[in-house]
Length: 461
Ligand code: 4AD
Ligand code: MG
Image (tube, rainbow, N blue to C red; front, side, top):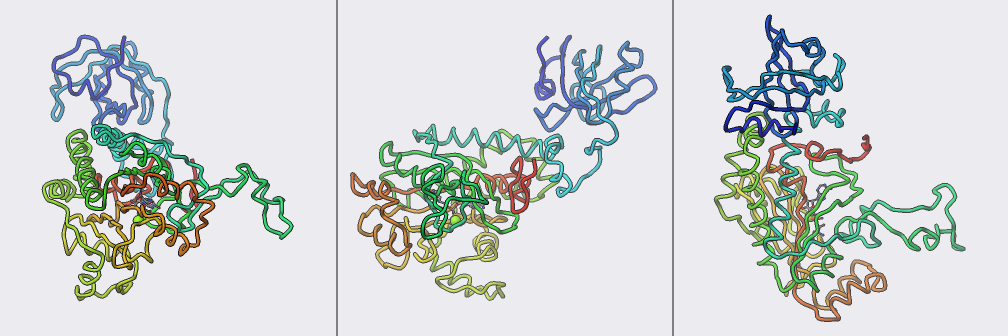
């Protein structure tokens, strides 16, 4: 007999004479003549109640079904007489597949997120993490749907690369050299010519440069994959391995880029509101009381736009005592970004035209010579979730920028070729998938929206 998912049993429109469920026991309560079990299979936040009559031939098995055990139940789906649920299952036969004893860490009581992180292999069985990872899966689907509907082509950019797109030097090296006896050059340096790829290679920090090559052929493209940064900052918003979505559009300038970013973020919020209703309600009850109000507010209004220069003026005139005082030319810190989104604009805000000294080599230089066509989308509660720009499409200006960043034209020959042959204005951005999930779920730490977090000093599992 075919398995029915708990989700489908809960949404049934009629009773069922025969139903077959498989899942894990969340709780069991024994009364005199019956046992009540709550069974969850991960298909929905809610589990289903199973009632087992003490007269059943299998009743002895039921006594072995402790919290955490895996079970199979055959029986009937009937209208529930109890409160709070429409349907329940009256068991007829019952098999315990895998027992769980009292050492099972997820007993029915509240656990801290820190504790659950230490048991990342079991935490998907909790309500909170089941919900987080259902939303994560749904939004991954919604991302493809958003771009595919708009005729963007999905490009798989490489994970191993020789270039440092962001120029921040936060690269993880990929090597097969023996670290204790590497081959040396005559000058006494490690000889990377003898390494696997014949040169230094790294895990990618961004698929952008490679995506640009595809945009300059297929017009509108996007990537969606893991990226890696050896950023030694232990914050709630940084992971060493995270997923990024990077659209890249030919024949597009900064305006069009900002518009797409806003449409994209709103699409994802709307999709989660529509398809993850119960999970989002759970978050708004137990994680962040303001969540649904905030998401709806964000959906209803246009995002604000503000130049970097104006943003600095707002910060200077705010009368705030900043931990990091800020003036034109400085990087904005998290406290500044959050002030702009949370207190000044009280909604997502796109800051654009940053000083060129703060940004990577590839951004298009404005006529003032001092700023570049960069954009960062800042949202309440998190700060930056998107970084992007219009790209420098003029060969000579790009060469000059590369010289300033001490990048070798020889190594980026293919990137320069895009400006030599059929160059076009083009633009794109990167959305940090985990930051977006934090925004949509209200979960405050990036470690709790990725299945197995990779952060400084932590690569368990
Ligand atoms: O602003 P970033 O560094 O931009 C780029 O990498 C561009 N190449 C993107 C592009 O234009 N195609 O990173 C983009 C986003 C950030 O806004 C943030 O949401 C996320 O990636 N991000 C991180 N998320 C988690 N942990 C980290 N260490 C992150 N670093 C960046
Ligand atoms: Mg950025």
